[in-house]
Length: 125
Image (cartoon, rainbow, N blue to C red):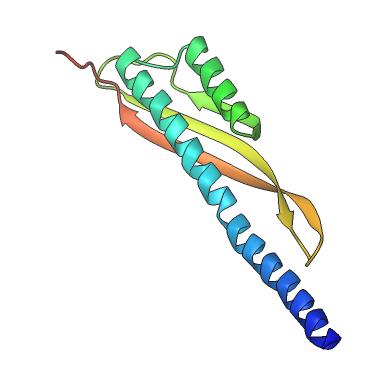
């Protein structure tokens, strides 16, 4: 009877480790989706205003740092006339703790890039 409890305990630990690994697989995907959403909002503002302002850059950096990104690099068109191309390039590193062994964790760094180009436009109501 005690052998069943030991086998059950080991199986339970392995099952939980597998479950946690599967959940942690989706962490970088979720972070990339959040980064794309934040950068897309900034790109839409850039379209309407004809380029990136210092306030937009600071807001984008603070939003990305708030979501857990580090070492953020931003390159964007600063001044464009309506009808010209506007580009936004954002590179950031996402650091998260990941299960490496059955009972060991270590920090993992994932590089994420957002690079889009669009046309400056003015929306009239």
